Amino acid sequence: MASDSSFDVVSKVDRQEVDNALGQAAREISQRFDFKNTDSSIKWSGEVIEMESSTEEKVKAIWDVFQSKLVKRGVSLKAVNAGDPRISGKMWKMTASTDEGISQENAKKISKLIRDEGPKGVKCQIQGDELRVSSKKRDDLQEVQRMIREADYDFAVQFTNYR
Image 1 (tube, one colour):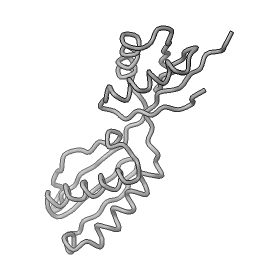
Image 2 (cartoon, rainbow, N blue to C red; image 1 turned 180 degrees about the vertical axis):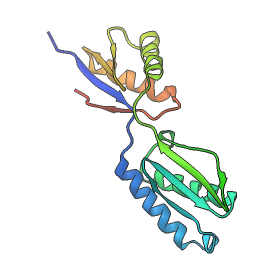
Image 3 (spheres, helix red, strand yellow; image 1 turned 60 degrees about the vertical axis):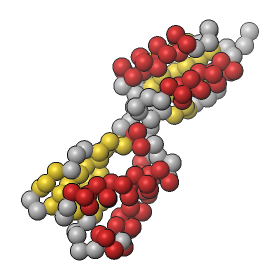
Image 4 (cartoon, helix red, strand yellow; image 1 turned 90 degrees about the horizontal axis):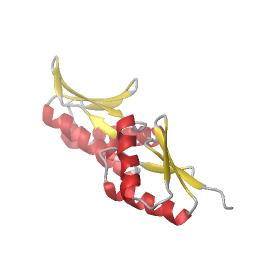
């Protein structure tokens, strides 16, 4: 009797890649002509990323630069959420945070998709902020991964621990 094969569905962000993207964005902002004399900056502020500049348009431009750096480094934009620009004194500010872990309701959505449309014999277990999918056939697991990718959820998904 063959043992079950399994994989985990997770939503994680590589903090080092986000940090590298932030460093690249900060360098570009400090060198670009359109950001000269606008006191524009992007930096970590605890667990959130803080962007500030003299105008609302410049803050949005900083966000665009940061997004392009994230994409180049392979970080999903679904994992980074930015707030709306707000004025604070004379400066416009905007904060962004990274989302990690699959919420209970999102895990239930994925589980329901697998139960309803997935191959027979595939089992799902919600384990904290991740979802374990197991089956006797590896082909079924690959089919489930394809289905989850095509479902295009509003959060980032990765597959780990494939055995």
